[in-house]
Length: 245
Ligand SMILES: NC(=O)c1ccc[n+]([C@@H]2O[C@H](COP(=O)([O-])OP(=O)(O)OC[C@H]3O[C@@H](n4cnc5c(N)ncnc54)[C@H](OP(=O)(O)O)[C@@H]3O)[C@@H](O)[C@H]2O)c1
View: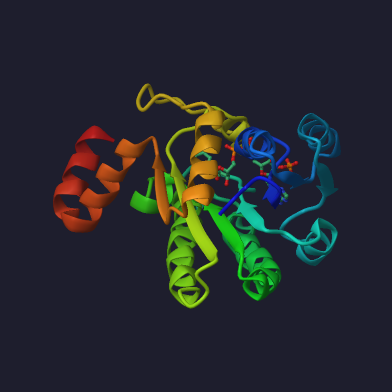
């Protein structure tokens, strides 16, 4: 769909990928609404993009956010959080938080904003998933599961909306992105490979997905290979993953 002139709501717009998506969308002529909890960072992004800031927690304020955002044409479900470590050491409240922010909140917000898009016969919903959700990553089991849920939710929703050709659904599957995500989850990214990509690259991918109606985009694109390998030859995938990490 045409992004110029569209009203685009980006959750988690106060940082990293979300802030870069806001910038890319504004650059393409969209009217941007950014949502997040950190007022200072959110208002700075809104000022840079000429957009509107809605201070809100996606896990608790979905209805308020949907109300303040107005007639949204494009919803980018980007807010997310991680946690790394052994499952048995994960505090139960972090389990609930990760499922709430990464999976339940995008489902609820989409449910609230979709009826208007369907009625108008025009709209687009984007989900920022993760390679962790496509292949499963050890010591990130809950994060992986929540992101896997998003991938399947997007697939199912796309099928459901087949009768409404003007409303699209895209899922973006990033690898490692250079943002404060790792600092916030309390465990730095300590692998040498793959190297982190800049959030602007993910933002360009989101813009292309909306403009061209792409169902699924891996960024970087080669990440599609391990995901496909796991789907088609799971035994070989597990052997390689065990050896290469
Ligand atoms: N960085 C990576 O390597 C990577 C890789 C694959 C996928 N992703 C996904 O990309 C998305 C963006 O992450 P990022 O890398 O840009 O990390 P980030 O810089 O930490 O940004 C996360 C954003 O989510 C928002 N957020 C978190 N919990 C929230 C809540 N309860 N309510 C409202 N907003 C909330 C934060 O806003 P406030 O702090 O203002 O609330 C922040 O704007 C996430 O879904 C993440 O899972 C990241």
